[in-house]
Image (tube, rainbow, N blue to C red):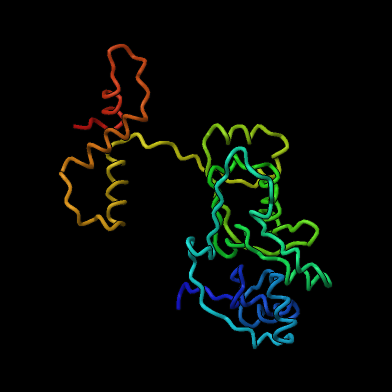
Length: 261
């Protein structure tokens, strides 16, 4: 059906089934069907195809996948704190030290748990809360993903990933990051969207009505002035007292809202 996502059964990165097709065949598929295939199998799937399915890609089971943040499928989330641990496995996944025996393909296929937030967000998105409070080493891991679409695994190569990185932060932390010359490479790959506080009561009303419509409380009775009163108090908390003599914060609120009655 339209919009459905399918992945290889059992893959922690909800791997794209089309990655099973060899690179030699992809050009022919593009010419005949107009389907462009980009990317490679994750180490886990590559190992399973070779060992469990003897290289027969037609035998690899495929299932429909539904993205879910609560089930860690297609939506990763990382909350940065300060001080913050610099262990990159939080993002790129951990390694099972008991399975490091064998050749490189075997090690990467068995030892990589692929349980990091960047692995979880493959084919979907990963959210960074308070992004620039994260350790610089962790932010550096985003560089390879942003410019090459790969997750760098220290000493073990890289893993292809296709996802959207969304980060949010406050203005002060972003200014410090922007002024840091060592962060120039990552800064050049960031599209910054400035989202100021809403200072209009009418717009605040719309926000609360939209929140109610999408919740289980949409049929709960509210006093007619409840939403407007909450909106007024919310906007007042964001306003700075005007410097003009004789003007009040309420005057400022009225002015911003085109003469609120």
